[in-house]
Length: 546
Image (cartoon, rainbow, N blue to C red; front, side):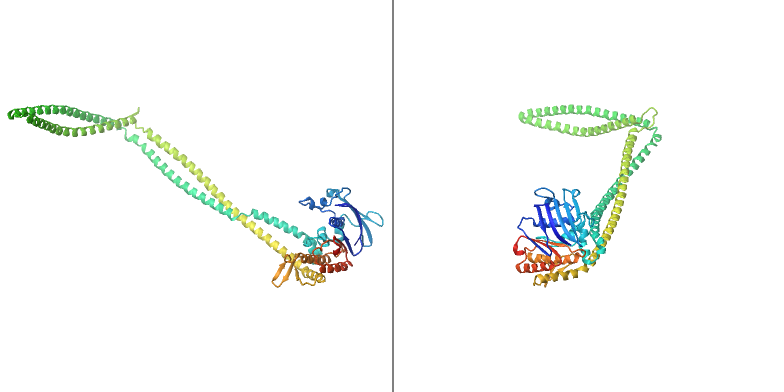
C-alpha cells in the first residue's frame, strides 16, 4: 500500500491544501501552529473515520477538535495505490456520525469501487483504529505504546484466537462488575453481629416478661382464693347480726356504768375542796389564839398562813392525785367503749339487708376489680410475649438467611476470583510467546540507535523496565530523551510484529525533540533504511531534525 496524494478541503485550521507523497521518507518541515498534528490525524480518519465515542471535553473529541475553523465542507480526499489498483477515498463529516459521507472510487475507471467498505482501514490493514494509532502514529510527548488484546493476538501469532482475546477485557470487566455487585450483596460480619445482639435484647425482654407474668399469676391466684373464701361466710354467719346487737347492748350498758362513775367522782371532788377550806379556817383560828397568848401578832400571822396553806395544799394535792389517776383510767375505758360501739354499728350496717344474709359487696367488688386489672395485665403480657417470640423467630431466620447469603456470595466471589486468575494465567501464557521475540527486536533496533547498554526488559503487557545491578527499575528513572528512545524502538518493533497483511504508512509527528544530536543522526539513518520497506511521513518544525 502506498499513499499518492491528498486534498484537504477543510480540516481544523488547514484549508484547500494538497500534498503529493513520495516513496520512502517524506519530511514535512513546517513551523509551530501550521497544523502538523491536524495533518497526521487527517490521514488516519481518511481510512478509519472519526471516533464515535465521546470525551469529557470538546477539544479532546476528534469531531469537535478538527472542525473547520473557517467553516465550509468538513473533510477531503486521499489517493492511494494497493495491489496494482489506484483508489480515491472521499470523506466528509457532520456534527454527528449519521451525517458523515464515505465514497471509494476506482481512479482508473472513475466508478464507485466495492473493493472496500466504509471500514476500509480495518479491511486494508487488518487492525482496528486503536491498534493502528498506537503503533504507526508517533505523537510528540506521548510515545509510550500500550497493548490491547488485538495487538496481543498479532504478537502471539494467535490470530485465530483474536475474537477470544478481544473478548477477554469485556469478560474481565463483566466479572469485575459482578464482583462489585456480590461484594455489595454479601452481608457483613457487622450485620450478623447486629442481628445476634438484637436477639439477645429480645431474649432479655422475654425473661423480664416471663417474670412479670409469674407475678401477675401469683396475684390472680391469691385474689381468686380470697374471693372464694367470701362465699361460705353467708351460710356460716346468719346469726351474726343478733350477736352483734347483743354485744352492742352490753357495750352501751358498760358505757353508762363508766359515765355514772365519772359523775360521782366529780361530786366528791367538790366536797373535798369544801372540807379543805373549813380545815384551813380552823387552823387560822388556832393560830390567832396562840398569837394573843404570846402577844406576837406578826409571828402568829405568819405561822398561821404557812401552816394553813401547807396543810390545805397537802390535803388537796393528795386527794386530787388519787382522783385524777382514777379519772384517766375511766376516760380511756370510755373511749375504747365508744370505738367498739362504732365498729359494731358499722358491721351491723354492712350485714343488714332485707333477707338478713351477709353481703360483703365492697370486698367482693374490690377483689373483682383487682382480678380484672390483673387479667388485663396478663393478656397484655401474653401479647408482648407472643410478639417477642415472633420477633425472635424472625431474627433467627434473618441470621440464618444472612449466613446462607454470605456463604453463597463468598462462594461465588471465590469462583469468580478463580476464573479471573485462570483467565489471567491463560492470557499470560499466550503473552509469553511474544515477550522474547519482542525483546530481541527492541534490543536490535536500540543497538542501531545507541551504543549505550540500557538493558531494557519487556513484560507481557509491553511495559518497559531497565535491568540494573540492583534490580529492575521503572523507565521513569531514565531521562526523557532515553525514555523517548526506548518508546520509539518499541513502536518500530511493534509495527514489524503486528502488520502482516498490508504494510502501513508511518506518521512521525515530531517525536524526536528530546533526542541528542548523535542519537538523532542514527535515527535519521534508521528512517532512511526503514523507508525502503515503509512509507514514512515525518512532520517536524526544526530543520536540524530533518
